[in-house]
Length: 298
Image 1 (cartoon, rainbow, N blue to C red):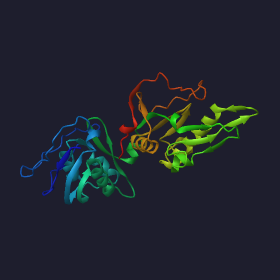
Image 2: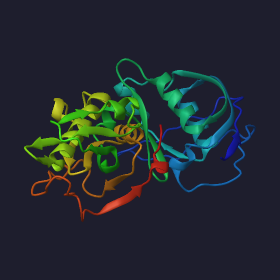
Image 3: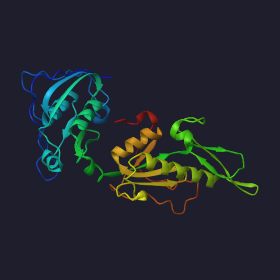
Image 4: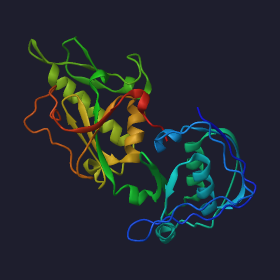
């Protein structure tokens, strides 16, 4: 882990980086009598730097603007923020922030500040990309869905007992006897034949329903929301949702995922013509495969 020493003794200059049609201004420099944090190693990825440890945070009554400026200098991550837009939505850029922390990841420091600055009307969040981080409201984040494909094959476990179908997600959701992250189900019998494919499909759909109930339940189109969707295609879950929701799902499942490259907010494939157990997303160009170790936790 990269370690940095960051002690706040002065109020920092204001950050005014605007988006959209307004000109984008770079972060202001620290006052000359305030030492910049010492970074022992550079990382090209902004998302990777969120895990860097800040050895000491000692901030007392600095404004939201000043906090963002300090955090950006401390981490080396460029921060984009439209303060005028956020203020119109209910975020006060002059609200004071105080923190005394030791040995805390940079992302956690920022998340704590976002909680402080949020209120009953608006939730402040951040969206991190490869080279920068943007502050925005939850309402705006909901307008930026991405599509990811989660392979749940290893979470479906067939028990060959030839009884009627009974889907049990307790082991998956609560770490039951079958182990955390595994759905155990009995197969459906039709006389002497067992419909394995249908049993797996039923279990996968049950998992999708449980996920929608557990993660942002008001978001999903299937339950009356407007900003997300979960489709079962064979042993895959195709999820259209904002990035912050995708991060929670990835952490919840703890499995690899793929992000589909395409028009932002596009609908996932419906799976027409596919059969249970056969992926209908084969051949879709994907941006990246992310293993379990690559799951980003916010």
